[in-house]
Image (tube, rainbow, N blue to C red; front, side):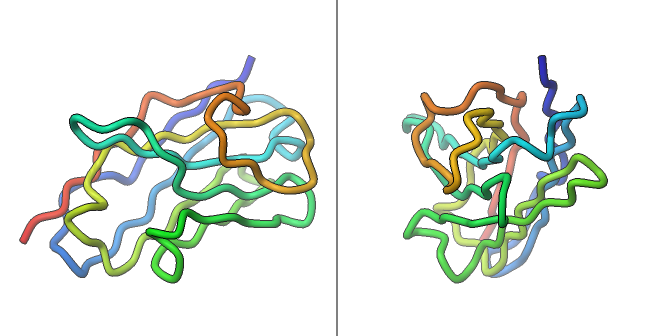
Length: 126
């Protein structure tokens, strides 16, 4: 079993930046593809970004390309999401997830992820 704990959410002005972190328990972190998803009020949870376990291949939702960057530090069992130029539509609860399939490329489907964190709130003000 893997436990994921997100942190770094908060209130930020539009145009500002935040960095989310997700710390994972266990010794198999190196072999997990890690993803970030988000859910805004009244909307379904959606894919944001993912990074594969091998070669750190990345994938992003079109809505965040060029503004968000996902990265990982295997020595710290941690994945990050750097969010720049935040917009009001980025406000949501952000979830970290782990995919243990060892796919060479990151996957964007929620059903493909095996473990989920509890989420961290990101609020974007005017």
